[in-house]
Image (tube, rainbow, N blue to C red; front, side, top):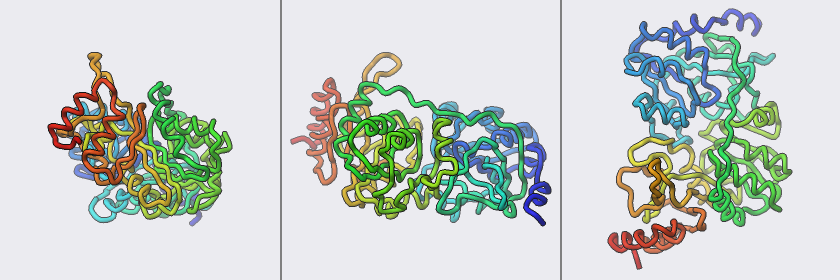
Length: 439
């Protein structure tokens, strides 16, 4: 049987395909642009026929019809490995449950502990060899597909084909149903304009980045500011090894800074796991031999990452306490995002020759009532710890960068207070004295 005959035999409408889902099933939607909007809408239309269908996803930008149509969660129960802004809003409404995880272990969870009755995900169109490229979701998709009892693929005509090292494709012979349909252009994710504080934070980072460094830049405005400033700097021959490839890397490439020539691992190729950003970014990664995507079980493995010398890891956090504990995923008990790969890269930076990890935050924030609060606090009281104090490395605010590695409790307190907002330094010193961590 030819691959095209097999394709036609497996072709279904979204409504036909979702009939394979039964009450009580575990369904997986994978991540970001791998989300299957046509299948999700068709499954939502079956709401009153189903109960207790449990759906997993992460970094999905919405809308998720199965969630929106069932505010009492009688029919569909949605959980996320890492909350996007949309999923955070769902969490605030009690419609999304967070799954604690490390991204480098995402495949391990599926292989050893999780059931997947039906996997549904968007893929690039089938090639002449019968393979569907997993595109922007390569980092997490293949382990889900391998575990799934039923595989339903939604062909999205706009998805880029991203080359890989391994596990970037699935063959038509492994698929149960294929769904086609018209899709809107891929969503783009404009980054918020950089603030004066963002630029000041980035200015404290740039001196630490040397020629030939390999960069991991996380999500948000700060990594993009770092990328933009590096693009205008004298630094050259930078490399990419990152969980997420965003527009910061495209800016560096266009400026001639991102060459990957001096990387020890995969020289000449930038390595990533997931991709989302602008249309220009999607066009850049499409069928580009200079970009390789692979599962996050590989991309985020600290032993793999640390093969690159001078690894520079840049991530955001929400708050830090005077002990050096870092919270990057919750504000109090409110889930904001997730652990993601932060701890993977903090660990790797300590193993990389010349490596450094930077956790960034503005020193303070102003709430909806106009009250200013410090992001450096005496101690946490319910916030989820993302990076433990035992692995804390560089912490950066607009007032400077301090290294906590090897520092005693009183040294940590002194250093962190030195980069806190001036309005809060005196009360932080008083707290440090009460906590007996002040010299």
